[in-house]
Length: 75
Image (tube, rainbow, N blue to C red; front, side, top):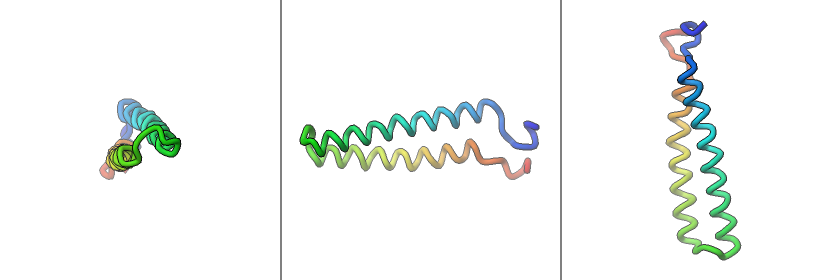
């Protein structure tokens, strides 16, 4: 089974860690958005924070997909 799917518990655990990271970063983005709309933080700072975290999420998404994709040589 392991050889057929090209997955192992390590790769699955690593993918789960990425999923948790996505939730945490999304919550931070949401918090910064709300702080900005309430006037608690400068809009420029909030915009830089949010855009930076979105770029990080994009990079991490690609890494996440590489952990859960099946290996071509084992299909």
